[in-house]
Image 1 (tube, rainbow, N blue to C red):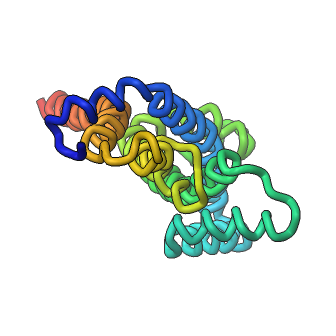
Image 2: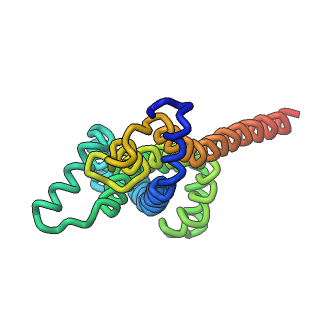
Length: 235
């Protein structure tokens, strides 16, 4: 039954398709909320890292280094079981949102930091001379210019976040990978390994591939645009 060409195995996948659709929905839902959290943390800590204030830069650096240099599985388990044993469990999906959001937020912070630092200093000085306050300067002048720089790497982080939802399996999650595993090892559905994991992988591919292509295409477009601008200036 585990063979790729087993009609019986594929029939079981179709019969229990609701299991895969539920897993897909939970993965998408977890990803969306985690992405929002990651972007928020990325902006906050990215701004702190480029604020020029030593205390804020130190706080941002500690957050980024601690999160980036510890496994997401460890962070997920720590958050889930620490809250569970303290009597404040927030549920598997919510745990996934927080863990993935905080983890990806550290990488988003670096993306925002590098994007902000890529803006010529003359832009900061011009905004300062016009009397813009810090928040106004970042909101109206710096961040809009930063978006075209950070979009490709930010999308790549989003793709990584979506794939990292599979980590919820370690805490008994209801994501796509977890429900696929439950399907292929279930009493009534067990054995359909190849079809089950192929369908699961296909769902991930259909979500992540377009995003990856978009990031690559946008990056190529920006490079082409920059070369065109340089050619015009040199002409």
